[in-house]
Amino acid sequence: MFSRIRTAFGLALLLSLLTSMTVFAKGGFSFITIIGADLKDVVRVTDKSLTISFFAFANFYEDRADAPSDPGVGYEITRYYIDGKSEIVFDQLHYYPETGFVFYDGIVNGDSEYDGEWYTADPEIKTVFESALTAQIKPVTSASQPQSVKPIEQVQPIAQVPQAQPFTTIVAVSAGLAVILVFAYWRRKPSVQ
Image (cartoon, rainbow, N blue to C red; front, side, top):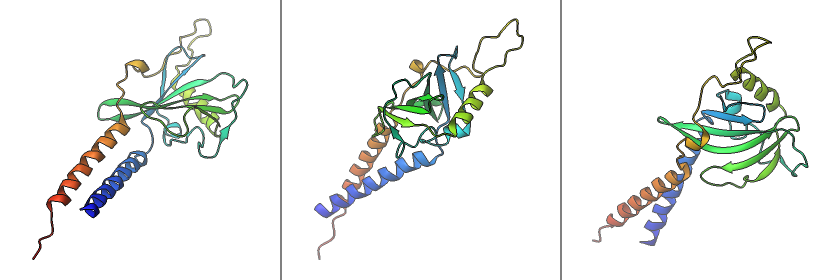
């Protein structure tokens, strides 16, 4: 009996790990939104260089840094993925391109060992970030009548975006499968002859 429970628990744990690896293997995020002091509105960016990886802005494993005394002007980056028709917030960070720092606010509906820490930004991300940001902002058409800066694609304010709980869903599915596996092994008693 104990062996069956242990096997069922092991299978549920393995399934949970495979499910979470599949989520990250799908290729990163669908888009990011950028808010900054010099931006009038939220800017939505889908540039693959900025959305392809969890570590696009900084390598959280290796590039931890001391808190800077003055990081400079920063941008709030919110990363999203799309689940069906819902835009789901995954995490937030602050990027300071002039000084090359990243502050990782953390996963929105969970936590990680990287939350609330400073990191050195990937040196190549500044050019990519500035190019993507410039491409999303409409250019000024006349020197005498500057146009207000607006994103190409309007997005809902962050507070109104439905925020699902992806890790809670994975845990709930894994727990359900564990219960099913326990009952399946428990009902399948070996026949004694």
